[in-house]
Image 1 (tube, rainbow over the protein chains, first blue to last red):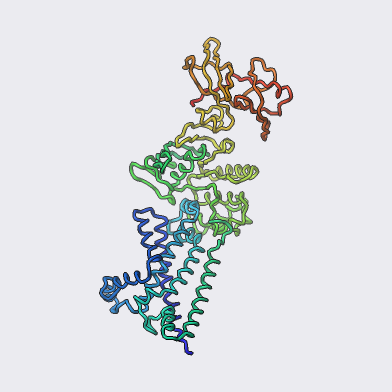
Image 2 (cartoon, one colour):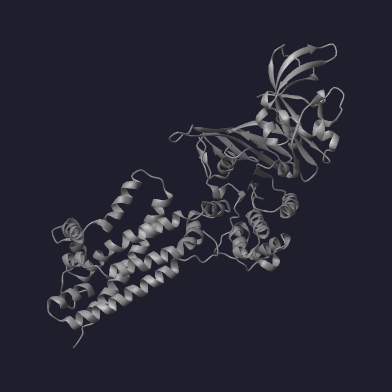
Length: 224
Length: 357
């Protein structure tokens, strides 16, 4: 039995990249949602949460319309980079991003909102700029929870199937991620390959969840 | 010196009435106390001064610096206001050591001197051995001292203290008071302190504003306010006053005396001699405030009022005797058998103060 490990590496690469993007964008969005009172905040919050509840096929459909070769964003992408976005491994990153971002935004917002406002008040009155308040006070206080959410988001992006297959397809050696490969193996009657990939991906997910739980625990000896 | 005129309105949410804070607060170079019950708007006032809340109207000046002016739309952010805040929950950053907490505040100190200044502050506040500890590894008193040291390091032009001794025991409080007095005068920083503890106000305050329901109802030295509360609400806050409902039964400008009909709890009625009350007519109803320790208590007082003892409560100094009619008296020692059997009280006319109800 020869196992092709490419799908696993691809999945890890896709999940890492999408988690990183989601972390950067999610922190910013979470900070905006938790600290700035603006109109339409609840609407944005709902829109951000939507990917958590919609069926993957619905999300995949939307993305195809937007990012496909005839879609507005897809055409723009092709004009800039000279190649289509859909049916490449980058499309798989977009698919994973749709799972990772809502998780990160939600958890990071909850973490930022659970910080005792006196800490930020104290920091500001001590002359710290908003930038310094965020990086030296808010983020370190919320860091454990954010890190735990990042681990969860990574595990979640590792496992996407529906959006990936609609947007990136199932091209072995190019866009076939591990969940797609498992489906392919089962369909093709290669039960032993499916079994090994299933076990590996389960072990990775379990380890990540264990890590997330450990990290969510408080480190300062008091509630923050 | 601080001069703050603040008006801020919170529309009432479902079921609750709107709250309006409307004050004109002035403080000199010493400690100014903002005294009042919970929910009077004390902490909100501090938030407005520090720049954490934005008033609808008013003007806030520290020395000659304009921090806020509603008319010209000047509203300095908190970091430029130079207010050193010490909160009720000690707000040392839990993810930093004590040293790092102080370092964080020393941004206005020149880089080369920073390490020295932080060390100096730790020493002054008796924390020199504890710089490497995290806040949760310090005692409550040490944390509160660290908060003050950190606030002073940021070179504020005004200290804002929000119930800083909450959660500290009596001994630590005393220690904190002397440290605060010492540090404040050594660095010459004026302070505004919020408290609902009259003893703390007397201990630290040079001037005091009493805040009730979003308004300043009386200003003056803490001692003066304790001796002459302007309204029944202020007298109640002092915690040592009897409030009596009285009706003017007779007025005699010749002897400078009046007779007052008192109606206490449980239909207790008695008449006492009071001072002449100018500007009042016969039959006028007034509220009298009488300090518990200014009422004479004993057996067989000539011209006294006979009452019954309901309860004797030991205090730190002396005892409080609760009598029928809801009258409370504090005396230095426990009452004897005679006094318990036939207790009498006598009111000195000059101890009866008419207050606005």
